[in-house]
Length: 247
Image (cartoon, rainbow, N blue to C red; front, side):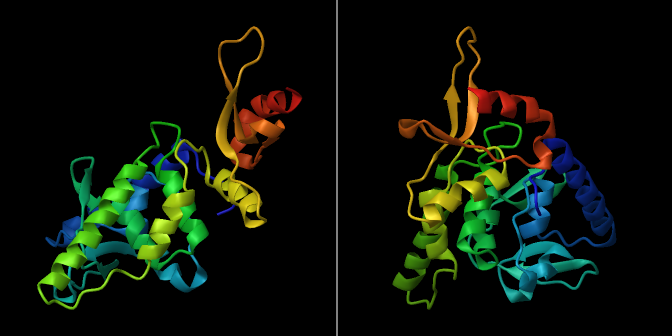
């Protein structure tokens, strides 16, 4: 995915996915919660870059079950086992899917660290219409998983944390709330990769005679440096971007 999706794009994808899920629910009484890519589409959350080896999760309606015996063979669906708390939300009163925090955590088995950060940012957008989670939501969910594992160990059960647990913790150290696009997040991570400090996101500046702030994508205010990402999805913002460059 080269550019980030707008609210309109994400809403279109959501309704397309709802149609698919509605058709499935007419064919079966099985109601496991939708998960992973399917949950992102239902929740209007931008899709991260899925590695080629995991493209299968893009090609099926994904669902989550607590153990293998809970799986059902329903055409067009793929069930994945998630033996931890399956937190859910309901979309439009009829489609139950994993919560944003649970969905993000499940994705740690499929994404590298950078895309895990990108997905966390996507769930914490500056635009309230696209905001689905807070940093505390992620932390609380990870804490609950850790507590569940510790309690199981205390009871003598052989239970381990999921494979991507450490990457989730690392990602939250770098993820930022209040961003506008996935490509801006990927741009933000480039300076860090080369040893620079993390730039500030959506840094506000005020022009003389205006009470409305301009927001710079990325900034090092102490050095008076800003970094702007310009993609096709920013076409309607082009004039504003040009004004920021002229400040």
